[in-house]
Amino acid sequence: MATDKTKTEALSVESRLKTLYELQTILSEIDRIKTIRGELPLEVKDLEDQIAGLHTRIDNFTAEIAELTKSVAAEKEKIINCQNLVERYDEQMKNVRNNREYDLLQKEVEFQSLEIELAQKHINDHTRAIENRRSDIQATRDRLADMEHILAEKRGELDEIVSETRQEEENLRMKAKDLEPKIDERTLTAFKRIRKNARNGLGIVYVQRNACGGCFNRIPPQKQMEIRMHKKIIVCEYCGRIMIDPTLAGVEEA
Image (cartoon, rainbow, N blue to C red):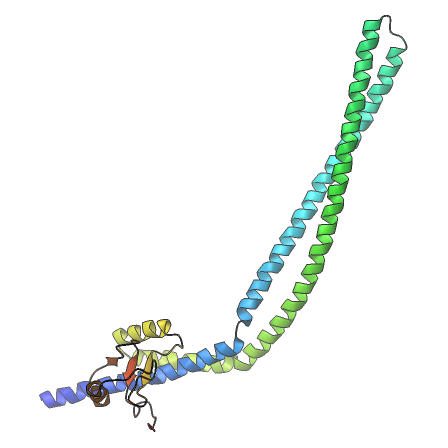
């Protein structure tokens, strides 16, 4: 009975390891597809964000021009009002009765003249700012056109690659999804954690020339024997990857 139980457990481990390696093979193929796509998805997203930022910048410049235009109109209105006051004060100065009234009106004329000069200065400043913002808008639009052209090219490249690999990736993901329930949760969780931390995405590797197939550190003979017995899951003491016998991976060791 004990022997049968051990045999069953050994077969269970062996089955899990074979399924786990099959899963790894599928996931590696998915990784290969992602590598083919390269940085294109990130480049497309980055360009889209930059283009959105340029549109916002143009909107802000346009809003600023609108505000400056309103300010120019207000300053022009102010000049007209000041000029009207100056004309009125000039007429009043012709009919003053004493020097005191004359001096008061003269000061009002001088004050309104200064207001006119100040308003004209504001108009000139606002006009230059409007011209600068219009130049900024044109420069931004030129840059926007260039980036939209680059984005169109990148999207075309990405769409072409995705269309070529979409069906293959979907099929692989379905196969991976079907395999996962055949592996116990604890082993699957450990495998995913190891795979996530591994540089090349390998969570399980077969023994190659008496060494770990992941980090290539030599495996002690005793541990190699345990791996060949398929009675328990063995991990590399150096890289943490799960190790299996080449025969389980369907590989003939040279």
